[in-house]
Image (cartoon, rainbow, N blue to C red; front, side):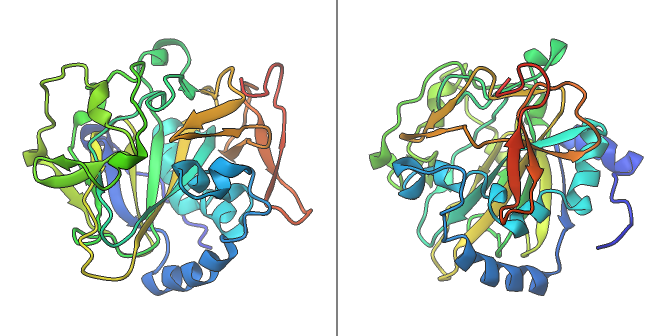
Length: 321
């Protein structure tokens, strides 16, 4: 691994703040990523050490099953702390950074696209904030997401789309509730494009029910395996459907990062969304850069007992904030 710094230059940082995203940039070479994924996809089928167990996680029918596999898989544990990612994240968030969640985003041939959305507190599915910024940031925070393509991500396989510059204003009220209906998956047509939100209709959260995203300004994030894109979760983003012209699924892996001053899962013991629930008993945020002087959150640390991470309290009242 290179000892070079991947911190953003002044020009790159200015562009990021203007557009709300940076990239794509290289994390792995294309053939390296393909080889790693061929190896890891079989290992990930073993959920015996995954921190989320039970029907909701093990069934695979809810997106919760795709959360936080960096806690039990060594490759993903290494991925979220790679300097190609962390140096760039710290350029935006400052030196003290946590990874509080990771997610897989698979899209199989014929799958619908993901509808346009923003996430500030991640209360969209449950109505309860999952991240809480301190002080002035309580009203507007979001998380920094680094989405890495593990396979080809293009307009045929369902790549991400962004509307640049939309990260500074929220068009959705996450305190509203959406109704989960799995029968909606792959059956909702949005102005000629099949877009859904994992069994929800994200339009239920619109502040103005008559408002529509300016899709004419959308840009497609075409990425090769091993490339990544960094963006604010408050940036208006979506994905296209998988056209089914290839048998290969499109797979993205997202790491979500916040400063150590942010409270994660405040006063929460169970995550309830996507038609299921999981206990946070074994969850912990990973300190990927700097120091945690705040002690707000439970922290996951490396262990040599056969699993990448174990958790410990960090400071007074640290267990889940």
